Length: 459
Image (cartoon, rainbow, N blue to C red; front, side, top):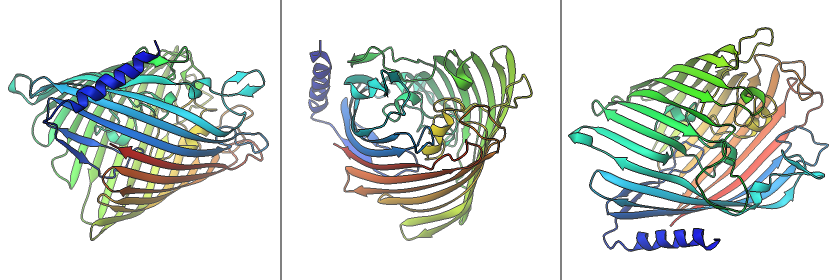
């Protein structure tokens, strides 16, 4: 049975190389997202893509903010994928991607989330498994109309749905191993500038389509969930693009914190992107209503970037403020006021402060924030991207529990990230984050640090 995953990889490789008319054009632009993007223009019946990622990570105090505990983690993450597809006709194609990621610890502290004997650890991080990262059928130009339908397991975090604020990672528990949604996405283009997307999805707490695994369950999500959205885009003019959207989500519950009870969430929002020669703005706001268990809910959220930009030959310099607001739950009311990040997973490009939210809201669930920040960025068209972010963070509501204090100052955080491209196939970045907690947390809470070196090879 252990030969099955390797046979699948072998057959995929054989099909990939069997096409003598294969033409592949790779867009290696460094984008402003958490992960590197790889866009491939496929022009043959049989096509393929492949990738190797090696990371070294160091985390300290990232979940408990307690320097007295052994919560230092230094480890390597090795991720590989092989994707391949077949084009039946000009407008009908199939694609699948098989992924593996393993971890190798230099030092593993005992402050993690699963207790066995006297030690905390996540056993699933050490076992070999192969999973489908993508598996879909794509049908375009249906009936001669500008209508496209994609059915199956697919990534949606990089499809222009609000810059990953509310639509991002469909599998947040496995980190950046996979991002997929099990979904049906329909897109209709009214013109070159405007379009409407209709998405239906169902995500699972445990992956039901694991190819091979040495563990009983491959946990990918906080809870089973289903939902979808309507998303209208008008991106005709670079000087002023705008989106309107309605998002629905139903969470089964059964987890902890803000996802312990079944939840039904309706979200209506908008995004605007005005831009001039030297000024730009990217702003989103949304309002939520629905239920949480037997109680009603009403939440608000906004995320705003903006500032000054300057073109310098083939590079662009940006500087300015940014702001994020998510309403928190008022403990004096039965109604739930906390803003739910839906399918967002991780905001902006940061990770460190999301882990401290796990004690408050649950893994990848971030809410109750009033953040004022600033950034500086220098970006080349395709060779490098250097950025620095500062966060001044407040809470809107206090939270009960030993992990929390009596104040509302969450603390200061900085993030530095330098991304680079070396040749056409090798990309790398270094990221450093530092969190100095405030009185929102327990007395004498300690600083937290994240350091990451990331290498990626596309072959």
